[in-house]
Image (cartoon, rainbow, N blue to C red; front, side):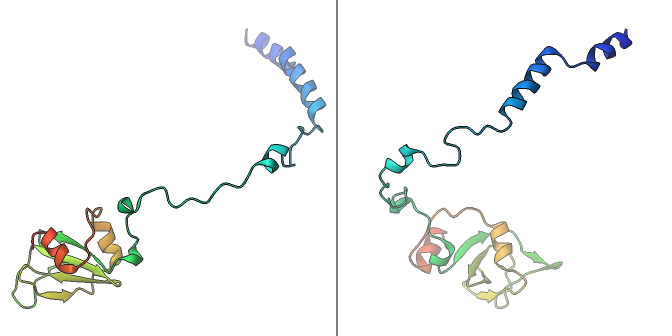
Length: 147
C-alpha cells in the first residue's frame, strides 16, 4: 500500500505542473506601475499640518517638563538588607519618595528630607505607578497626597 502512495507522489500532480508553467511564464514580468509613482499620488494636494490630536488639557507633560515626581511609600523601605530610617526623627515607614534631577529623596511624615544615594531614577520608575495628577507647586502635591 505504501509503495503505491510513493509511486503516485514521485510524479508531480496536474496542479503542480500548471503552477510550474505559470511561474515560468511570469518569471520576468513586472506588474504595471510597480516602482513608479502613480498619477493619482502626484495630483493629490499636500495635507495641512495639524497640531497634536489631543487637546491641551488631556496631554501628559514629558519628564523634561516636570521638576520632579513623587509617590507615597507606606511600608518600611529596606535597602541592602537594612531598614531606612529618618536621620532626624527615626521613623521608618510612611515615606514620600521624591525623584528630581536624577536624585531620589526621602521625606518622612514630620517633613524631614534626606537624599538616598542607593536609589536612582530607574528604581523609582520601576516602583512607581502612573501619575494621577500634576501640580504647579510642591505644596499642592503634598495637599493632594494628604500630607
